Image (cartoon, rainbow, N blue to C red; front, side, top):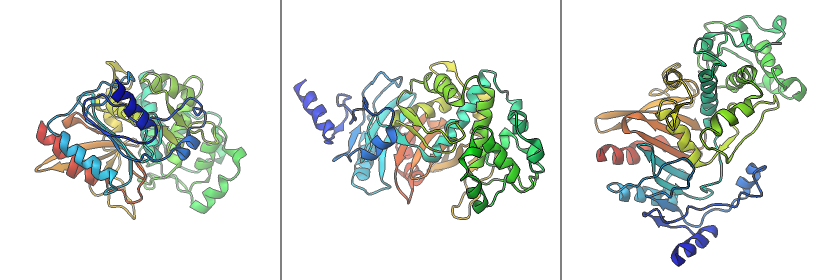
Length: 394
């Protein structure tokens, strides 16, 4: 007991350790005084002096069952030490769950077990799952995915909408295929007037100032308008606000109580970024996807919707990144990862800098990663160092 208390004291001062018996406490911060201002807390958190690496995570009674790994313990510990020694993309955390149990947990730099981490564009995946929850509860239907978004956004000035605005569906917005095209300079100027961005007025801007929308223009383009329109539709159809709905019907259901999700000027949560989640909460999101919308045996999101959201809806393109082996669903990415002669399909939420919530059904695996690197080579690292360990051990 004395030893464990000394370890705990050490962790509080940024001194961490390698664990394997589930008896060490992961590094934490005192959240009591900062719940209303998590972004500033995240900025003021000191870096850990040493990494915390645990192959037998502690049960924190947070809704995540825990287990331990044996055969591949050394290979993952070695990888974690390399991360700690700055041999890879700068990471704050790497967590792995298999067979619905958290079996590996590690924190580096600014990582803490109870500190929500910026999710960047991984936020979009959570937005897609919120839409799925609305479908499960009957506020939307699967058929509604192919209905015009303007049919849900009451009060728009239809006379001001561009030609073809009625072609934009939820299916289009959540797969980045809305067809909305506004020059960057023009959009920046439009978004400077905060008064015209509240509520559905933001959708009015997107759908009134775009070039005419046609079936030919409804091709993949990664942009901020599409997730925001999806969130505005959610806000329009659920009782109360989208923010309250997400908290009550998803976050509370999964026991996620330490988070931050910034609201846009429009009054709804930022749909494309600005959420903050703990690494363990990211594991929960990945587990929800892996279990086809079920959480603790309860169907929170329709299985058919999960299949659609993580399926191939669009073919992503980019001038700076090669997406040859990628496809896009509803704000979810897909790509095969190869181990030997076998391929494993990874479905994931992805945020810039190295935020990943990855589900790999064939290995019953969930991987949650938070990073801060400009040169993100995470998928390559997973393919070469993490997947082989689990693939060869099964």
